[in-house]
Image 1 (cartoon, rainbow, N blue to C red):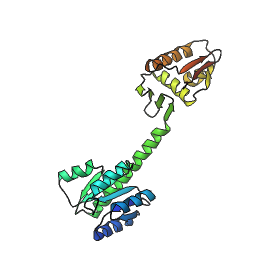
Image 2: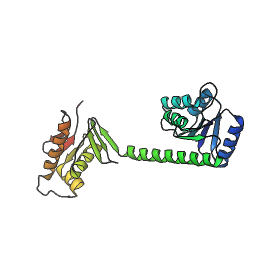
Image 3: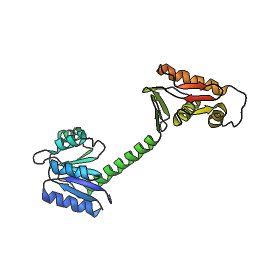
Image 4: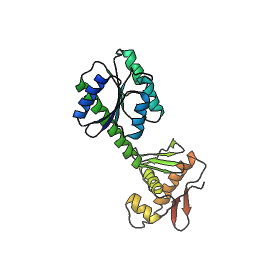
Length: 235
């Protein structure tokens, strides 16, 4: 947890002091709040990696605070709820309010720290995977490709493409409005760097074009006479 910022929302000073000391021993930076307005200000002005939230708070309780944080757009922020209210029904209430984990008081500090580390690590891994996926996502008008999952969509409808058709569409969507000569397509898709005198490019472009046009009335792949093909969609 070294260098990670944690927001602790706890109104009992003795409990807060113990938690803060334990987390700071592990290198975390703890921001402490005792009520909703203070917690929200901290959340809005700091890069918080985890919220540890007591349920039994004055004015606005932890369940409502958790719901409010989610409503305000903090959907991916891990929240660990702690409370003296044990029992399965209270755990369910906490999780249903948007908490990622629930710890009943009294708890051992070592368990709190373990759960905090797990939530932070899991959230960072999810953020990393999301970033990787976004880097492999291409969109042009109504056509979208998720190259992480190797899936293509037209108007949100998944296309059933062969491997060759998929590579062809991926090449087009990476450079929309660029005219690709047949020899260039042969080289990039089939690995053939000379004109083999075959119509294989035309055949596969036609296959791809038909599949796209089944999902939309708009024409996407155009033939440029004497030159090649282009992905171009008019508004």
